[in-house]
Image (cartoon, rainbow over all chains, first blue to last red; front, side, top):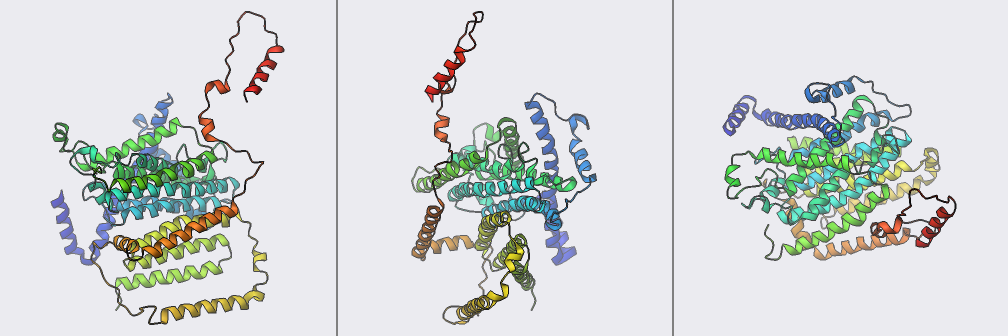
Length: 355
Length: 218
């Protein structure tokens, strides 16, 4: 596999010279984005199926075997629908908003390692880059809410802006703990810092357990998923920020939301569950038995677990009231994360720090 | 010589100048705020070219990701009357122009002065594994630890002052005590009454009694 890639690189260098670099990067980007888009499509089906079974229904089962063609049918339907731009809407921003929502969800993948060496750009400030990019997703939502010139959309946008700014802080502090533990901001180094030869005992979710929980819950809040989906609170404000969107504009918001879910799952795996590392590495019997499994498999398995939890949350918890949401963010998560930063910093100075 | 870096620099510089101009010329305040976001982005691009990736990303994270979101939040909620905003533009123009001139003069003085700025200094190129973040962290917590702590205290004072200025207790507002809510037991809220199924129930006396005892509990 590696030799094949090297031969391709050399052949490309010979053929195209200086233009080969950008072209090869483009190929890599397509190789990352295409499966994410496929994953998004089938995550919608998984969501409907899992929610269905949790609610004692069967979920979609008419289009294709087990409903497997349902996402394609949905996609085609949304593509064919008319895009309605409301009168009084700011046309340019109305059209730009879904794009602004989707782009940050995809660009953040540039620094996510899928396996050892499988990364588009190993930036040494990768963690900061991730924080910066995920904080941009809110622009799509507030611009959509404002440009729609609709009360409901605007209320959804305002809710979302306040919510994302609040939870970003807790998320940032949780990641400060991770970078303290790893002593690096590169995602590759963070994963490698969790490799001690003891398998899952070396991962950061053990010393940073409260941060692990806070990060994932804040991630659910950042992606506007239930129980934090107040931006599209259908029982109160119709459909929130995307009330006025139809057809492909609506579909892009959905793509962004699901791409963000996959991203948060990937990031939680990288930061707290050792990314591509084998959980049984160095264990007596299981370690030898699973040594042949590629890192990509572990990464995808961990991501799937978190994606399932996302869907499970949605089927389980009722939506937060707005003041409860703000209370959880400001009065519970931020103090907790602040204290844990100090605890970890002090703990690391003692011989009791095994990570 | 035009290297790719120079081309990228002029691209970002032109973009930030354009965005900066549009911030003050755009009629719609929301558009102006969004152009400010664009200006921040192009400045972050220029800083990346200078290998200051920590500052560049922090600019995007703090200013674009948080400050401008709140800014937009406020601008969108205000009902800005454009006609009223333009009133008296020419009356105040001389003062505005004077202020602008003073600011430009200060900038020229600071940047043009040999002692305060090294304008002609070459940008030092670093190896690929050079970490700007690490260097900055080391400097902030060693050489510049006192100014850094001073800035932190200043910000803390500002936070406390802002809260003190806006905090007012409203007597009429109803508040929840979440701890109390969580601590509630079943017996505080529900009274189970066992009633014989066959006996005749007088419909007037009992509900009143229940209500009375409920009120006592509260």
